Amino acid sequence: KQEVTQIPAALSVPEGENLVLNCSFTDSAIYNLQWFRQDPGKGLTSLLLIQSSQREQTSGRLNASLDKSSGRSTLYIAASQPGDSATYLCAVLRSNDYKLSFGAGTTVTVRA
Amino acid sequence: SAVISQKPSRDICQRGTSLTIQCQVDSQVTMMFWYRQQPGQSLTLIATANQGSEATYESGFVIDKFPISRPNLTFSTLTVSNMSPEDSSIYLCSVEEDRGDIQYFGAGTRLSVL
Image (tube, rainbow over all chains, first blue to last red; front, side, top):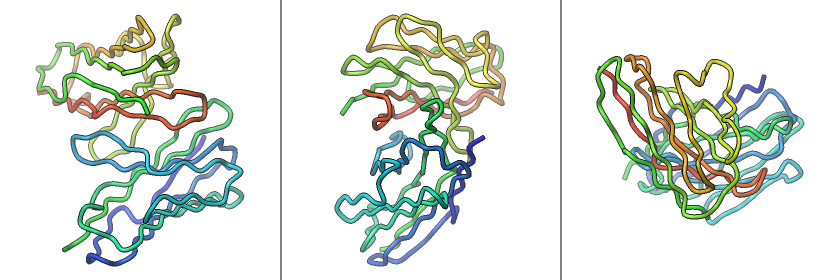
C-alpha cells in the first residue's frame, strides 16, 4: 500500500524567505507525482506534475524535484509572499492502478 | 484545462437524511473521481466513475452509502445516504483528461451533519 508523508505539517515564515516542503512515499512504482495547492473553499489547484522519468520541474518561483529511487520529492518556493499562504499537497499516481495517493499536506503561512 | 463546477458548495444536514452533490465539467472527460477529505485529514478516493459503466468503489466505501451516477461525459452526482455526524467532510470531484495526466478538482462541498 502506498503511504505518502509530508513534513512539516505546518510552516510559518517571514515574507521573502524561501520555502522547502518535503514529501516522501513508500512505493517507488509511480507514474508521476503532483504538487497541489489547496485554498479554503477553493478546492485543489495543480502546481507542478513530474513524470517518473524526470528529476525536476519548474514553474516561475516554484521548483519541484523527484528522487523516485529514494521515494522523495521536494517543493521549493523562492522569495515567498503572503499570497503563498495555503496548504500544499503532494500526491503520487500509482502505476499499477493509476490512482492518486495523497499526503496530509503542509500548511504554510507567510507573514508580511 | 478542465473547469469543474460543484454544487452545493456547503450544506448543513440532519442525521438520517441524504444529500446529492453535483459535478459539472466544461468538457467531455472519460474519468471522473470522487474524494472525501475529513477534518484535518488528506484526500481519500471514494470511487471512480466512468461513463457507461458502474462506479468502482475503493475499500471501505459501498454503493448503498455513496451511490454515484454518471449519465454522460460531462456530469456526475454523488449521494451521501443516511448521513451521520461521521460523514461531515469535504467532498471533491475531479477529472482526468488523459490517463496519467493532471487531475483537475472542483471547489468541493463542505458537508456538516448534525
